[in-house]
Length: 147
Ligand code: DQA
Image 1 (spheres, protein in one colour):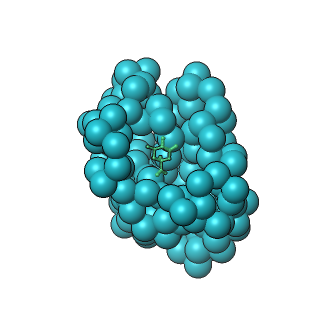
Image 2 (cartoon, rainbow, N blue to C red):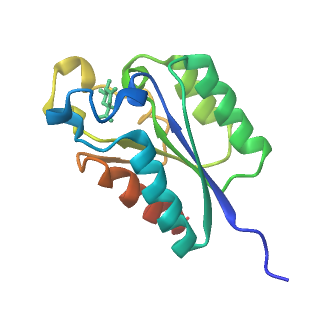
């Protein structure tokens, strides 16, 4: 019998439910469902079971990080949206779990406003992929497959 596919949890934070219509010049035209479909297809090729979630609430993201650990996920891809720059709770949650977390951004925050230059998520994450639009998630899933 083949072993079950490694699980990758893709967690998305505030306002990412509006992808497709939200500042498309910054974030592109793909919706979060489009990205989830692409990740699921790539996951199948890589032998990874990908689940995608989105919440506008910080505590949900904290709970889902804990859940990734409880369920034995191989890795988490986390686009925490604006909480990236503010959330000590997410920083602590990433540090509290053993599951590697890959920080993901569609845009490159370093090229944008100064308040986006600091990442509390990135300071705790295994690594960061940013600036490639929806392809940031694709690159991050390839990275997760190497862990
Ligand atoms: C973002 C970058 C954040 O600065 C911003 O608050 C977002 C989206 C990105 O994917 O580029 O909501 O995480």
